[in-house]
Amino acid sequence: MTSLLRLEMVTPENVDAACQLTVHPEQEGVVAPVVQSLADAYAYGESAWPRLIFDGDQLVGFVMGGFDPDSPLDAFRCGIWRLNIAADQQGRGYGRFAVEAVCAEARRRKQQRVTVMWVQHENGPEDFYLRLGFRPTGEKIQEQVVGDLMLA
Image (cartoon, rainbow, N blue to C red; front, side, top):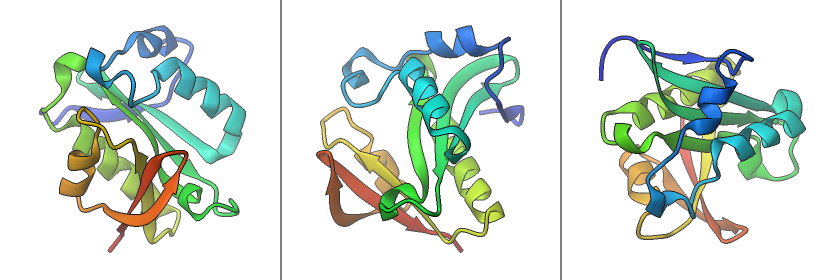
């Protein structure tokens, strides 16, 4: 991982590249494709916080935070809604960078807790989120485990 990591908003200039970003084939059943995430971002409007992850000039991933403090579901008030790291870029710290970026945005918005949901699957992201400090809350939404992380 280099020091040239940054997040960028999705724009007309980079949306096609974003839609072509793919995860490992065995992960496709446990994470929505970027194109679906972008449609969700459009539908959720200001609550969604979609960003592309770049290392220098190379697109390496996509993350979407969700910030809806008035949501009736606690798990959707402040969290990581989606995270996709390109298949050939995984294991290089980009996912950690993305999670830290969502947490930084949550702090900026004066939030103290970040949630995430994952599918329990052999190719799912559970171990990744547990290593970053997320803990299962005991709640499940649509067969997905809800995890949370308290921010310092």
